[in-house]
Length: 144
Image 1 (cartoon, rainbow, N blue to C red):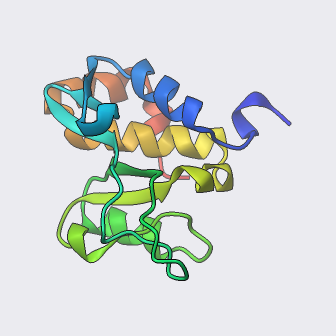
Image 2 (cartoon, rainbow, N blue to C red):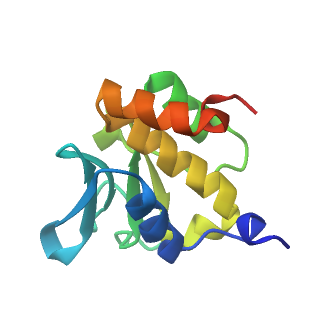
């Protein structure tokens, strides 16, 4: 299995987010990282909240990662795909983001995770920064 095709990990989320240009990390509540570009968050590790709970035990999920998306169509594409590990909650209705539990990261390859992170960054970066990055990475702007 090639390095890029192995299952995604939490360490990959951190490494891939930090590999994008102009990224800063701020400490969110409970010390969880928030990745930003130009002062705008594009990935954050969410604290346990009452809207994301185990349907059997009622226990709050403590491993939810939030990824920004470009628009509602992108969001629906990710959460609507059969077998997708991405989800949303009513709290995020109308918000351009998707949720993913860290325990479900292996459902994505590292390559797929990189695409989600790049798209999250692109959705929040300034138009100039996004255009510059896409010019340097033309394969990233192509549909599969």
